Structures are given as structure tokens and as C-alpha cells.
Image (cartoon, rainbow, N blue to C red; front, top):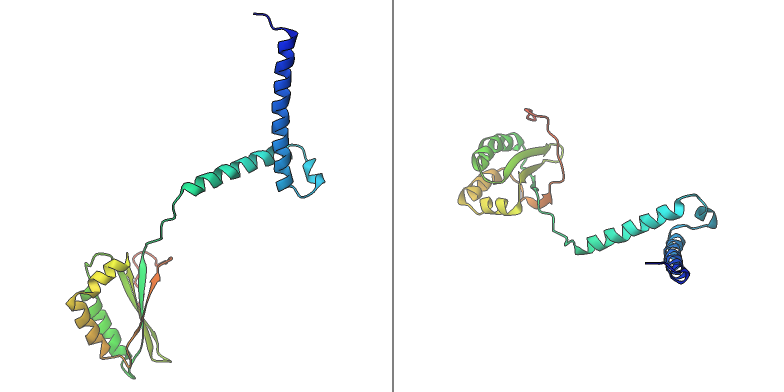
Length: 179
């Protein structure tokens, strides 16, 4: 098979057209990325910018297919209450006695803390749970209501309740905060 000069000219024209298309794409990319003409003259920048732009467009295409999943994770139940005068120590003793009995072995329960601000007679109880549904299941049981009524004898008013997402914590291994 012989390659004629006419065939060579057609192939050269096709190659030149392809190169012009790629160069035009790179130029358009540079117009979007670079803010001045001086930046266009840095060796290798045009090629790097073109590749970077292509990678960004591929990432955008991939991100369109991903469906956002709601975050469900550990939760904290925070109860804040005003304590009756001279009842803080009794509340602490009852909490230490009753809360472990109430929550020991309950699915999803991760821990509990009782905090005091003695200057304002306020207390906060923080319980940690794997999910809201696990706390809801426990709080629907009769023993939960009985225990809360026993602790409520130390309250001056009903507690304010809130549920928070547990974002992070740190406790050294084998340590327990002590009073």
C-alpha cells in the first residue's frame, strides 16, 4: 500500500486540527483559572491548569451521583435542673445509687455524668447514647419513670431537657472522674 502525498496532507491537516482543538481548550481553561497574562507564561502552567480543570470537572460529575445521608450517631441527653437548697449532696448520693441500677446493661447506653454549680443550686445530668431511639426505648419503661420520680424529690422545678449530637470526647483509659 502506497501513501500518496495527498493522503499525507489529509493526515497532517487532521492532526493540526486536533492540536488546535486541544490548544483552544487549554486556552479557555486558562482564561477561567489565571487572572493575568503574566501567569500564562509560566512554563508548564497551561498544561497543569488544563489537567487540574479536567480533574475538577470529573469530581463534580461524581459528586452529583452521591446522595447525602443524614448523620446518625451518638447522642447526649442533657437535663438541667434547679436543686432544692441543701439537697445537692443527697441528689449526688441518689444519682450514684440509682442511675447505675437503671442503665446497667441497657442497649445503646454509654455513660452518665452529674454536674453541679453549687453557687446557683443547679445540676446537669448528661447521659450518652448510641442513638435517640435507644434512649426513647428505655425512657418508655416503667422503671425509668420510677427512678426519675425518686430523683425529682430533690428538684425545685421540672428539669429542662435537650438532646445533643455527641461530637467528641476524651477520657483517659481506666479513669473515672472523682468528686
